[in-house]
Length: 217
Length: 217
Image (cartoon, rainbow over all chains, first blue to last red; front, side):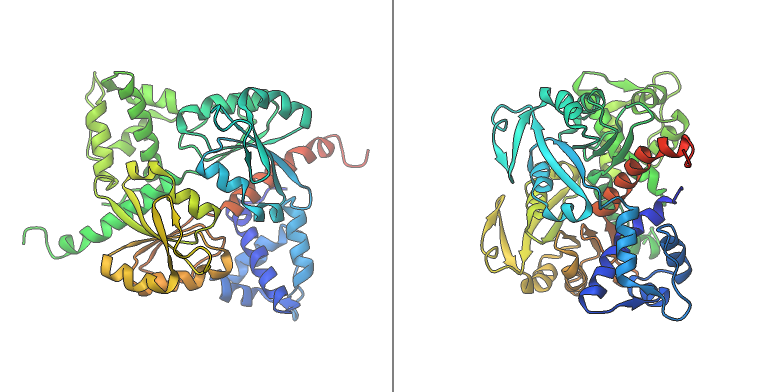
């Protein structure tokens, strides 16, 4: 039942692309066409899509609607995943207001913060609750997914509260590694690492001409 | 001058950690201690840090302040990277308001959108400009970094405008692969893929007990 991470990462892209085809009234599609449009190798596409249990037909390819449904089922998007979010700052607010998450099966049901000015406020229809209520509420509501959009300094402490509330998976936007029990699923969304990578590559690019021309001149 | 991507990704984490030490008044640190605190192998840490040109001393380890400065220089955080952002929705607004980016050398100098209701508005001190001005302004201001926080449907079109304006690197938050010339640096920040990965792993977890007990009972 395993699926390689890169294949898993590509499934939402296929899903988005297939929905575009569907909107254009296209009912079937081949791996070759998907490959051309998404800049991927057809053999890889076939493998990726096989994980959803769907195999294309030799001449016609895949039935678009069937494939969309299979991806959604495979990724669990039909079952709504309820989540708690901690850190009602700019990024937290953006995620709370991101309506398209619901298409992908995510519903953020409550936000938490420690800032007395934020607690009690409504953000995109969700009330900001005090952090000390998180563990208890997570247990009572059987919440399994936690999202951390708080500053790095508080992330570890928040993660521990989440774990004590029975949360099984953490989507961590704070730029620190979390120290949690090995059974907890952690996905780090590290914007600073991304930025570091981009800045470094750009810096290299603008240095390279001088080096290529020979350093001593 | 190459550095492996995982090493590059870890540098901001070391930077954050070292600043925490500095704030506590700690002046030197060893790889072993960093390893314990960040849950990493000391040998790996030593390799990562060597890319910045700093080598630890046998007994005392690294000088914290020196190492912080070396990481900042290496990642180009001392040179401010100016960027244009396209898509002044929830996520774009969050990034525009994210003051900590400036610590990491990023300054978003202007935002663009196609929505007449957004154009002319001020968001976190930046005016939202019409998208058709992007290419010309990017050229005149020598902007090399573009950030896409627009919907997937518009991302390719925006990327082309960026490239025509001389932008060299794109930080893409839209869930599509961009078709750009090979010399353009693209970093995809695909929140839907992250979500897909998390949902799938959670779904697996809650299915596993039934499968382990034997499917037929």
